Image (cartoon, rainbow, N blue to C red; front, side):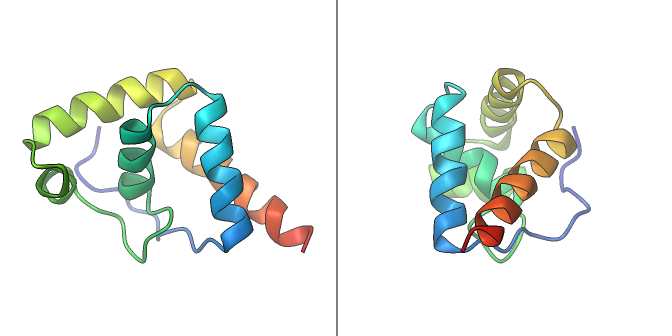
Length: 98
């Protein structure tokens, strides 16, 4: 897994954020797993955070964040790029319905 992802952050609107949160919950992610995925993939934020940065936010080391991220990605059934594409689709879908 890369330390940083090459894509630009996703720019969500409020409905998009709600849809992303609902989808992540429906996939069985804990609140912590959801927050880590969103930070690592750039959802809800203006940038994509590194393992080190997310670790500092959660007051754990980067390896622990990597493990949580990997577990969450397994639950979501894909790699980071596939999950990112799914989240972008959810956000685009919510923008089209407004």
